[in-house]
Image 1 (cartoon, rainbow, N blue to C red):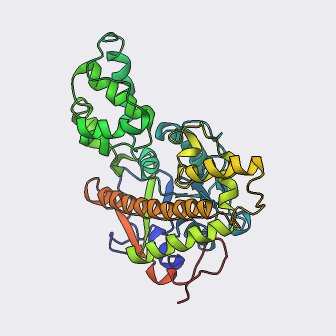
Image 2 (cartoon, rainbow, N blue to C red):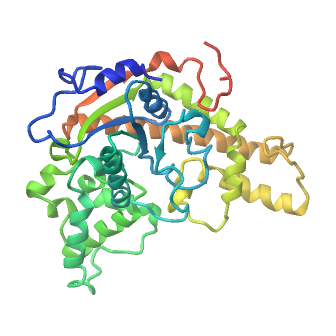
Image 3 (cartoon, rainbow, N blue to C red):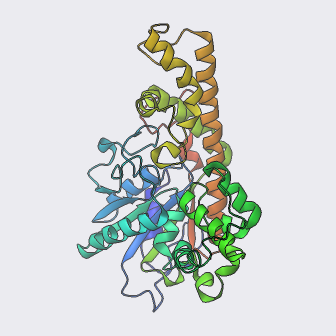
Length: 380
């Protein structure tokens, strides 16, 4: 999507300051000797994965490490937009489809999996290219300090001492936990992912057992370093692939249509469970919960023989068609909202945490593209 030549120039460690599309700055004395890593960031659908593969034409030894919280799970390849093998162009890809879909996987887990892989790539003289829209995952790689590391220590020290004190701790379900944390401590809530239920629970427990806000407990030098790249274990060059919001919205809508044609609905049907939680593992992915009402009606009818449609997209029942259309519309709307959240977080990384993000506007590349190789419904 973005011009790989311009991105390659930015990734090349030659002199230059952090202007848009400019080369990454020379490493500081504290950075010398650390392995060089390229990090490709951007909202969903911006073209990060394609740019990462294209960079292999400009650098030797490129290996891609996915930092997408849903792509690391096995399953839902279409829905999570994993790069098909034939589009990887022989470039090694890591952390795709490696985790059981029912397992809860946190930023801490990602860091522990990704760091050894990155180090192995560096040890064999390669260039790790980290790609993903999950900014919390990338922060866990870049910053030597993880907010939840200290939370774990505080949790171990305080919970045992106040185990009978349930002040402020209720049996809120997982869906309401993040909203409750935002009400109690919006600063702490900003620092974690809304679906990281284990960490949300930990912060609520800290509040209940100490009576203090989690953000107040984490002060001093450690808090100042949180999320900042200045003391990173790697010498990082950050590439932000972006586009005009209207172009991204249009592209997201088209991409959902392409995914529906490519088998998205069958994928979701295969993992559907009426009793499953949508707050754990792969079922957290946008595009699963949205089809719940449709499958609650469709599957019983299919089993009873009321609806014998072999093709899920070729449904003649008006009620089912209405539910399916509504689900697709909701999927598009929720994906567009995700785009906005991701772009806001990227702005914050530059403004609040001092990340030197090299910004690339890929708007012109969005006119007639579809990741799945299908013809977009609207022409240029």
